[in-house]
Amino acid sequence: MSRLRTYPASAVTLLALDLVWLGVISPPLYQAHIGPLLRPQPDLVAAALFYALYLVGVNEFVVLARPQDRLAQVAARGALFGLVAYATFDLTALAMLRGWSPLVTVVDLAWGTLLTAIASAVAARVGR
Image (cartoon, rainbow, N blue to C red; front, side):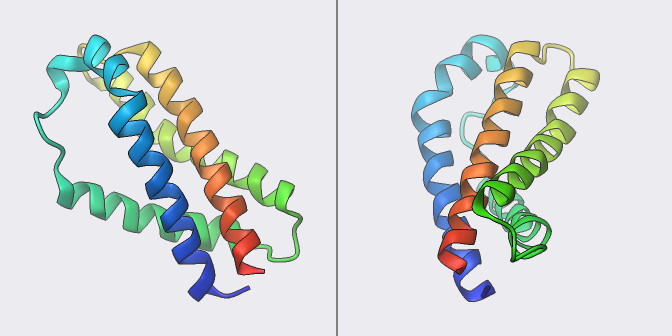
């Protein structure tokens, strides 16, 4: 399996799906439940750093870690990686930030789990 194929495949998948999520689907939920905590515009440098690091995790710890695994196994490992990674932020925010929403936490954990499972499976498929 080639990094030259898995990294771009996971990046395109992750960014395309997350753009739809963050740009279309989730804004009403976020505004209703954590609106006062949101910036008027996202910090694009911080976002770029997150995606760059997250793609390393997805590829090195999930997609390329066991190249012989079936796509369903890669997707399951991606789901677990996504759940753990998104829980790191969401549960810390829930523990530390006054006004953080439990509903946003649950929805975001579900989204991170699904998003990472899909991106991992696509990257593995393209990498083969």
